[in-house]
Image (cartoon, helix red, strand yellow):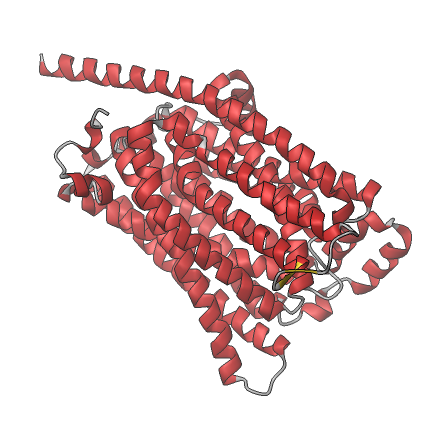
Length: 516
């Protein structure tokens, strides 16, 4: 097979593990550190938000679909609109500072006010009245309103990934990285991102153990409260460090405009104005973006459909918030380990050797295979013909095991090949297309996919009432979504190849004209 031109000048092992030139380190290392810190916070917050809403008294995984439809999706639209307005007024650098500062202020407020006074703030009386008026299928909606501060924490923590990481920093990375650099850098970014998951999981476990050690004799609830406050303090501290590194990186790129495609000053002068309506219209007018939208939406629907059932089973096995959070962080560690190995041996090398299309198809294939084991074990658990135990484990433990395996594999694929192929797909686009596409895809379509999965569950709850009764219909819908995803990835791969060749031809023509 032909050697990829992007790794010319490196030895065989250097090209495989560290395909970076020395002069590129001053840009790569700060970006790698920022990715590590932002994803460290994301992994920490992801475990905390699930623990808060799922293990709250009288709550469960059924509340998540209602949060994603009635709160998360509207909030994502609002924040995307705010991002567009700020982008029209300020440079991308200052937009990052403004929005990240707002997120940090919320987590400080939650730690100092919302969580300590949660019993006085939560709407228990109103929720009790609603439970007398609404059908059983709306139980998750009632719990969402009852624990509104937990709901808000869940939404802001989830939007950390969509807004701070993918919309803001990945957008910055795409504008600052050339295609031949992306083939080498993005796999390394994946390594840093996935190591952050291992670090976040270990940090959360240590915080829980420390709180138990220093508060011997107290209740598990008190231990959970202490570890929560410690973890939020760490999240705020690492976010501030990431902001300082981002400031340094922008000063570096301003002093060395050759490190990026276009100087910051040039972008500022030619920056067009956008509106939410223009972004949506652009999605429907571009076949390229429609394929990308279908990939993102179907991925999030599939993930959401499986995760709700898995978290429901996990809540049955670990009703205590401390134990639930400990298990979630162990899952984060194993996800980080598997994703790190995938970053080293699969993602970056797969892009260079097999190309965009085959690499993009890895994620739906993995989800297809792991979903079979999970749904099979779930159906066996609900069957009246099966014993309560199978081997040394109960059927519930088998469901949690296969769900955990599915979650680890899907997240590992998502943090490596899925995110990298999605972000590289933006690089051949113009600056205007990148801003419009990123705002619409990461700001709205990601949430649309998750809300789509949640809407499916809400409709099924009205007819089936429980997650277990909804499982057969969920499996059929999941298979359909995987088929659409694979078809869209194949189509986008052809268009990506065409656009990349056009960009290379234009770059060669420009070099020839300059040299002549």
